[in-house]
Length: 413
Ligand SMILES: *Cc1c(COP(=O)(O)O)cnc(C)c1O
Image (tube, rainbow, N blue to C red):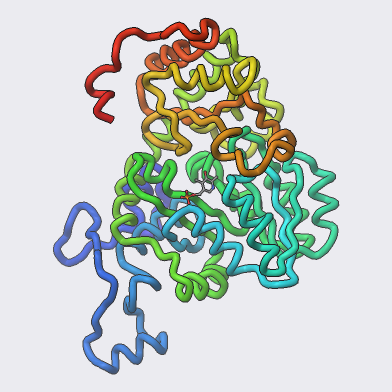
């Protein structure tokens, strides 16, 4: 592909980053190799001196992983990308490579559970001061960033309540405090939000979610400026070893080919499902970024080109009603994963956000009635039928909402 031509995202997802071998294969080759051989001792020496470009070892770099990194960088509009074994390897590598004892990190409170643990528990163990703020509160960001700070970590929209953080505002305050801004962009996907355009320095992904999107592999990516990736991140990854497997990189390259189609279709269905839930009796509240009833919808639509594939809602009542709803579903799976082609629901208070405790959940608005729904590729009418089945089970507890067993094809899942 000629780099001079500016292709649009759907095209980049198919063609960017590909480097054909002399065999002229259509689909990217999969280089399942841990090491590489040199023509002679001189070439090995020159490679280690950095005088020639040659793959050395797959912990440092691998051709299939590199193709995935180039495609991710092209999609994001970033100078460089490093792929990692999981989303958490991406987040922890970005933070641990940048920070040292005596530094300070400020993070929005509404973070993915493991990201929250890294900031609240792991980093202080290494002498990094960590401060949490309410991501929607400008005054809280101003106060937290009024002293020198090295790093800001935030997620927008957040998991699970789909809170929005004003990227431009936080990036300006963070840069004045001397911090780089790391944005976990998993919920928005690289298609619906480009944090670098609002001033972010580093973007991280769990590629396990929409980028694979078909429930197969774990993966992560860190994107940013070439100098930061080369000088700060790469030495950390090279020496600590959170490298992505070339097999996973190849699966993720295949996932990217359909990313735009999937995210577009899932987003349309999510919007429909959010509308259905908002009008349904038994649902007390719905959160979806592009809906006018989202408290930050104007901000969301300044930063995102669409509402995304996730919907949060609250069933009237609490845990018993939420569980009755989830247990009555026949199509939508109970799973804490998200961004998959199959729709999934989770009850954050008892799963993903159980460990943060009741007080922190209350601060985040995660009540016992809140359910997170990741909308997949099923026919949206089958999804709303299934949601209606769940709501009927709350209205009539103990009554089996569906007498017929699930269809054979579904039972096989
Ligand atoms: C899933 C997820 C992660 C962690 O990614 P893994 O691939 O599971 O390690 C981090 N942040 C967000 C927002 C996520 O949804």
